Length: 399
Image (cartoon, rainbow, N blue to C red):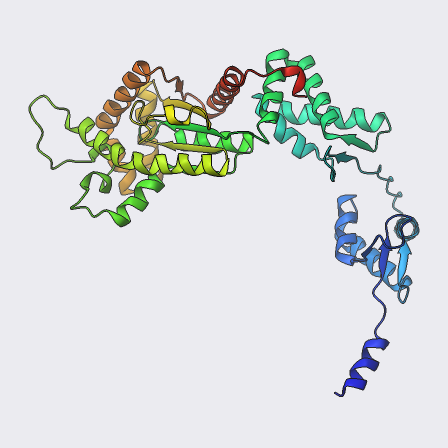
């Protein structure tokens, strides 16, 4: 095809339609049927009707370069009305204009109950309660006729709702964590505990509720070290914590299980310090969990001025329930690793007892992980209470 033929073909193509959003003729966006279909489905229109409506809109406006948003909306309502009459369906209710959340430094985002309820989880309340508060706030804003709300004002509304429903302590927890969304120094949560106590599940759930994107296990650090340090050189990291050094001969009276466990944790602690240093360098909050996070093993004093480091030990204090957890895992998974946990339960229990003794000696709080939901709330509350004490916040300035 020659250059002139290509130019002729280009000129014969229909002009791509654009939608004018405001009075500014330059403020336009392309008309896309896919976006319209998505919008109509969100209104409750079924997929086939939404697709047919978008296609009909395109055909009616074919050849036009620009259409105003108001005209486009009127055309959509007309087509939907015609389809409803033909199919004997009642017309769809008109949707309210979307709420917009504006930021002090510029920019805006659509209001979302899901996003707001997610942020409310940092107050250590149940997800259903968080969504209920977010829904009340949305209803109040719509009833007032508001179409825009400043983010600061939205936080204040959330604080007032939490204060009314749950009291000042819960409301203040929400404000304190909001302050840490743009932190001067990161929050680093360490969850130590023996094998099978539920610390990883707890870490993931706490991270989800607090919006912390970086979650690391010391198992991952140990696996990386295994690739660089051979079994002959450092045998302790090439086995589970409860059988870290089974072939070494210890002096009489020395607990070989605990000695091997501490030997492994000492090696892994170098990687732990590297993770802490990286979080501080990047000013990024972090949750780190693992059996190698042993109270007293890692000196946290160097991080006092550069990070909020919060250390907790996770345990299962009910021994029978703890044992049943491993038995159930063995029955359900049918894996060799699950059987090993049952066979070595006494060793695992000795390591937990050591964790509890060290936690008491170094004043590290203990979370008895009876249920994951209850433990999540306890951990979040402890994090926020610690930040309150460390920060010395004037709560009147946090809203």
